[in-house]
Length: 531
Image 1: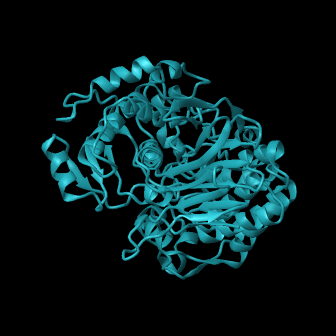
Image 2: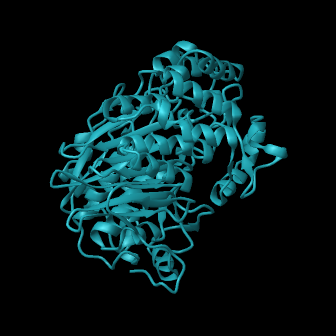
Image 3: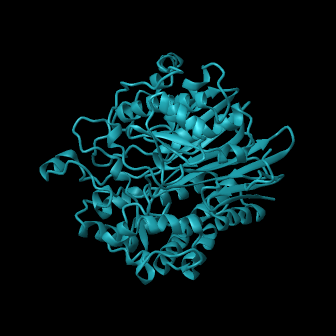
């Protein structure tokens, strides 16, 4: 239990439905749907559409989506991959002939066909009880009437003013600058696009005036996109077989590659077989987590790609034998000095995403993530339709023969990952931690905090974080001086990260006591709410 003399927040308890998102209005939208008889999937779509309007630096309908859904009584988890593909003409021959050796994060080449709207419709057709016509109404109102910019959104927004100015994205620089907390921001063009999707479904995004506007915007900037690429995107989202790992008496589920959820399972598997450490905020725990992450991320950069194009060795990477061999390479006294880099220095910066989770009165559990990748994605706005476009293609390599080399119709290595914990064939906890490349380590960090060290769900999210990235360990200011000194002595190079690591939400289904328990990220503006 937290010290009530100190700032903080308590877990949220409820008995019927619960939602946890990164913005209060999105959480409220989800709970409204639940109270009106909708299920967890309906509520998640309503919430994420609101987030696409009021947390625009993190997500939008010009982004991608992944989902894990555990229907009550089904005894299984369904995974949906809603990540978009490169345009058909985007092949390595074209890039080499134009002497392009890398993709800029603000260029049209960084934009893949957005998969989010296709994902929402695909999920609702399979599991929903309501349609986009009803569920998009709150988002439409916020886009048309405006909403007050929240503090963390404003802070993020100010940090990428240069990107928006570079790409001439004046709609997002009202009065020539970024909004301050409490400023009302409106997006009338986006409201019209959302109305069209509400009336006609995802087809209104991938065909017709909206698609034409996006394609024209991208081609004017040198993009290779066509309206045919977008038309194919209508059916782009697809159900895939989730991957999982038995861990600590639970089964932890992730979406398979091209997402990086496999790293979460690898980190959990490496750490599980180690001897007792010094607790959740201890030096030994921090060092081991860093080393396990370094090993897992090394393998990500060597192997992770679109399995439709490359053979990703999932079975080997999750085998107990392989995880044990990685575990054995970790020393409790010093950092691994000669870790093979496998392209670590080429990782693009880790930034923004939104994650949310919902559990309804029947026990359906939804783990849902939607993202533009970096803050405001590419910074390219299709002005006629109001659609800000992601920059997921920045995750491709322009390197012939690399598993993640760009190719027409290929999905890039993807950072966004929803998580789901099952126990005895029933959903135990939908959870997620936002934050680009940090996400797998964040997932493992929070799960260990809660299910290994026994912190409550809110404490598990609050606990200060660290992350090995680019040859250094980025730490939050809450990491204790003793741990900082100890890690430095072990050979780690530490630096305080300007931005906190990620943002988590989680809902624990406490079946023994008959209640739901949720935590929400203090590093963002959101909250958990139930009824």
